[in-house]
Image 1 (spheres, rainbow, N blue to C red):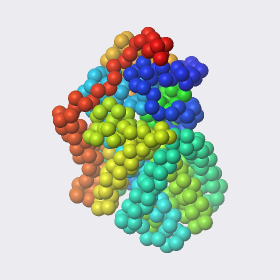
Image 2 (cartoon, rainbow, N blue to C red):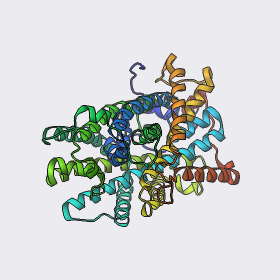
Image 3 (cartoon, rainbow, N blue to C red):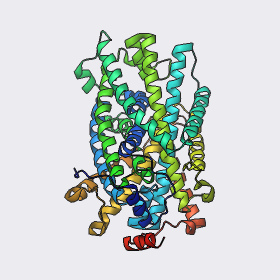
Image 4 (cartoon, one colour):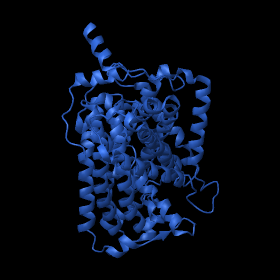
Amino acid sequence: MPPAHRAAPQGADAAQLTQLGYEPQLVRRMGQFGNFAISFSVISILSGCMTLFGFGLNTGGPAVMLWGWVAVGGMVLLVGMALAEVTSAYPTSGALYFMAHRLGGPRWGWFTGWLNLLGLIGGIAGIDYGAASFVGAFLSLQWGFVPTPGSIFLIFLAILVLHAVLNLRGVHVVSVLNSISVWWHLGGVAVIVAVLTLVPSRHQDASWVFGHFVNNTGWTNPIYVSALGLLLAQYTFSGYDASAHLSEETTGASVAAARGIVRSIWVSWIAGLALLAGLLFAIQDYDGTLASTTGVPPAQIFLDALGPAGAKALLLVVIVAQLFCGNAETAAASRMVFAFSRDGALPGSRLWRSVSRNGTPAAGVWLSVGAAAVLALPALYSTVAYAAVTAVNVLGMTPAYAVPIYLRLRAGRHFRPGPWSLGRWSTPVGVLAVGWVAVVTVLFCLPQSAPVTAATFNYAPIALLAVLVLATVWRWAAGRSYNPPVQRSAELTELEAQVV
């Protein structure tokens, strides 16, 4: 791992950003822990693991859920390390697309930005819709509420508005909430695992937890089903680019943002494994868990193991964590909207790049949550739409991670690393990272259930194709407006500062 570095003073951050071609507009009120906290909050094992838990029970069951978590976490850590190295060299709110533009040119930057934006919007939709489902489960236990697609969608819209309002309060509020979120997540996992270990009188044995395979997908090939089951882990391990998107609001960003990416992954890897194991050991009735009247399998595990009072208490722990997660993802997406619009890439860029008095891209916040609401609309009509929404997140985000890594590999010695560098490990780590992303991208374009009908169709590739078509058409129509700045020399930046 790279050696420790002292955080750069704020003046050096501003000078570096100016050298990269941007005038500082956002306020730097986030420290190293806050930067780590936002990526950790977006990964949110209490969101990804819990909301796709039922999906995992059907696509491979306990064996795939646990071993898949171990394997995917290891590969994602390599992707994160490779991405952190490039982030250290180019710490801007544009993050992935700015890196791609700088290393590969305008076309690479343009399409990487649209992919990243799709992934971030898909992330908001998936996180907040999952939180709405858990809120519905809590209301079901507390007051006999019967969740329906329409009622869950209304709860989802309310959560989107909540996250918009919180983000409009400024980056200081976002940073404080994310710092609380870290301890809430870690403490919540510890409480859930401890309670599920100590309270139930019966547990599954280790051979069942680590070796039981279940296939409820309709497909007959166990390898294909196991590959589909990796979506639970891969979806959870996404969003760590949030550290890069908040780099213009972070002190010592060239080191802090890189560290934030890597640290958020390995901490989530360890804590998530404990959470999944605790839930699987505590399952009392597998089929009953899947058919839960709450609509949320983890809620049924809590109910069977602890009774109504304990189940409601743990559900509240999970719901609060998911709300933290959605708020952090909204912050990251709004910064991506701001940066992409600042460089003229979005229709109506003049509006979306505006910044309020407290340094918040307010219009970008509202665009992010509004687009997430539209993306989740199919959940009103399809019982498997939520898994498709999460696949949209993976299909948009994951390829966008690989592009800067690939271009960094292609640049070879021409790439000038920042203070956080992998050194001689850069090439092998980068090659493995790009290879893994290629596999994942193909995998999650495949149908998840058989037979394939209108209700079970995986529309994630359609969403991906639609965004790529939109990006292509918009580039043809107005692509000349996309103009990220050319890097300025350190000497010119220093001279200008002296003149001013």
